[in-house]
Image (cartoon, rainbow, N blue to C red; front, side, top):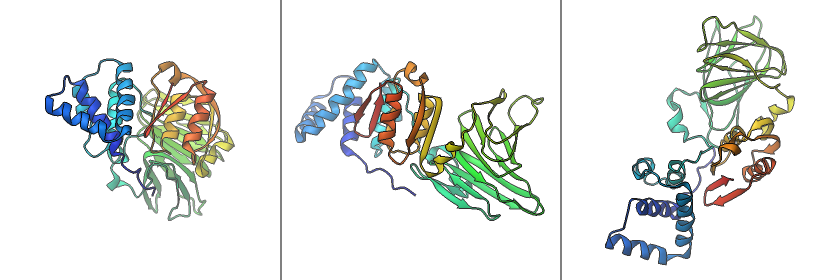
Length: 313
C-alpha cells in the first residue's frame, strides 16, 4: 500500500491559530504565544495569512463546527476544517477507516493505490484507490461484495458455469460474460460493461423495476429511483486500471472526486458553477497535480496552490 503523506506541523499550527482567532480576541498569554510562533519562522506568518484570507473570503463560520472537525495530530484535517466549514466542497474521499469496515474486507487499497488480485477461481479483480471487496466462493456461486470504491472484473469461465455476482448497497451485477466495472458512489452504483453481457438488478428501487441486461459498451446507474441509462462505456475507459483516467462530458466535481482517490492533496471547488461544468479528456492518475491542472484548464478554471491543498477557482 502507499505510504501516508508526511505530517505538516506548520499547516496544523497555522490552522489552529486561524481557528483560535475566529473565536474572538486572544488573551495576553495567547497573544504572546502567537507572536512568538510567528517570529520563529517566516513561513509561519505566510501560512497563517493564506489560511486566514480563505476564512475571510468565505465569511463568518461557526467556530464550534471548526473545533469539532479539528483532530489533534492530523494536519490535513486541521486545514480541511477551516475550508470545509467555510462552505467549500472537499473533493477527496475521507480516510478509508471512516468509510468502510476494514475487518470485513478481504482485499482493500489505500489512497493512490491500484491493486490487481487473482481470485481463487482464476478471475481477476482490479481495485481502484480507496476501494475494498469481500469475497465468498462456494459450489453454488462466486459472490463479491464491493464495500467501497470501484473495481474492474475479468471473469474466468468455468465448466460447469458458476454464477459470478457483484453486490453493492444498490443492487447486484451478475456476469454473463467477462469484463466489467462496478463503481459505488454515495447513493448510487454505476455498472459499465466492456465485453459480453451483465445483468443488473436493483435492490433499493421500486419493487416493479425489472432487471436490465447490458451488452458491451453499455452503462447504467442504479439508485433508489431505478436503473438509468448512462453515456456509453468507451473501451479506453478500462485504462484506469493502469493509471489512465478518461472523462467524457463529465461534471468537473465528479472528475475531481475520482482524481482525489489518487492523491494525498485536498482538492476543493468553492463555486457551484465550477462543480457543474463538464469536461472531457484523458489524464494520468500517476501525476495527479498535472491531471488537476489539465482538468481545471478544460473548465477554464485556475488552480490555487496551498500547502497540501488545491483550490479550483
